[in-house]
Amino acid sequence: MHTKTIFAVLIVSLISVCKTPQTEEPKKETPKNVAEESAPTEDDQFVKATEGFISSSTYQVVVSSLDGNEGEALDLAKKRALNLFIAEKGDSFRATDRKFLKELVDSKGKIVKVSKPINGKTYYLFHVSQPDLKIEIKK
Image (cartoon, rainbow, N blue to C red):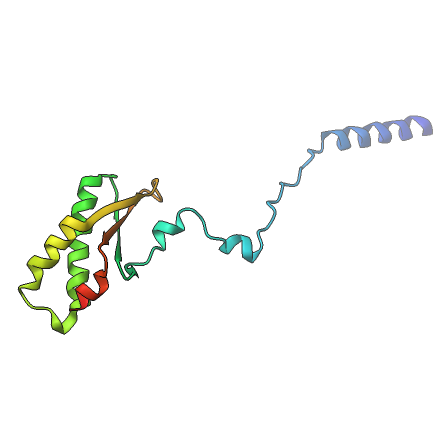
């Protein structure tokens, strides 16, 4: 009888071990170091783009559109560039400057780069380029 008890305990133990679900540890993503996380991405050239003079001959404006409409973005960029030029002139701005600045933006401004959608927005880099633009604006 003693052998039957040992055999029964052995079978019950074996069954309980076999029925215990095996839990697999989830694979952990390799943590990124600070340099990898702060490395610039392709999107940064749009999202973190600076506005203003990027050289003495080029002024940059950044606009975004939810629907990716380039025509609408162009109009918005022209308006923004005009307003920023007026702000650049500051106290030296005269009402007659508005017409000159608008013509400058319309004739020398263009979208130079378009992003792929980033968080649902399409970004546009708009440049107004002309030799000695910075000097011309500051007059």
